[in-house]
Image (cartoon, rainbow, N blue to C red):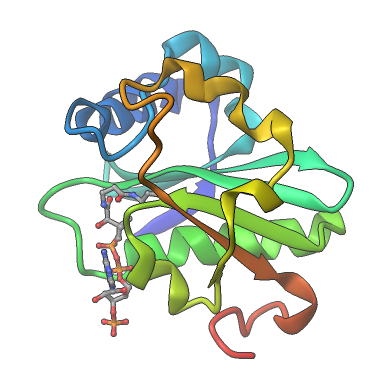
Length: 161
Ligand SMILES: CC(C)(COP(=O)(O)OP(=O)(O)OC[C@H]1O[C@@H](n2cnc3c(N)ncnc32)[C@H](O)[C@@H]1OP(=O)(O)O)[C@@H](O)C(=O)NCCC(=O)NCCS
């Protein structure tokens, strides 16, 4: 398993993987255009030649970033790939000097393992909701908002506080 920052040649693979889950309403759909424009947000995981996971860290404001488009290919789940991708994003957020990372998700139990804690959605800034207009569930969002305070996490030790 190799985890690295995405390259332009990964964009189509990211697009396919994210939209498999978007069809089931688990992730927000992403256009290929939005993946190219935000390519530098993405981490990818490869097994050999195959892209099997992706995750994006999107900076929202001086103290806040969002984890988005986390997906591990069916058949590769449960092998630590999702964990490694989230850890890469947390490490990157710390290196950037971000103090808090949030996620909107149905996979609550997965994120609470990293010490994310549930917060009320109205605690998140308005600009976060800009792309929700693209979601089939808009305006009745049933995802849970979770926030991680990075001051409680040390690099290389992301799962422990
Ligand atoms: C959620 C997802 C990214 C997890 O990826 P994964 O590679 O299967 O997860 P990992 O193997 O890294 O799991 C790490 C740990 O979390 C646990 N875990 C995985 N998914 C979980 C979930 N949905 N709820 C609770 N715990 C979960 C695993 O059992 C594992 O525990 P362990 O360390 O005790 O063995 C993957 O299931 C997926 O792509 N789901 C569909 C898309 C999605 O829901 N994305 C998240 C939206 S933000």
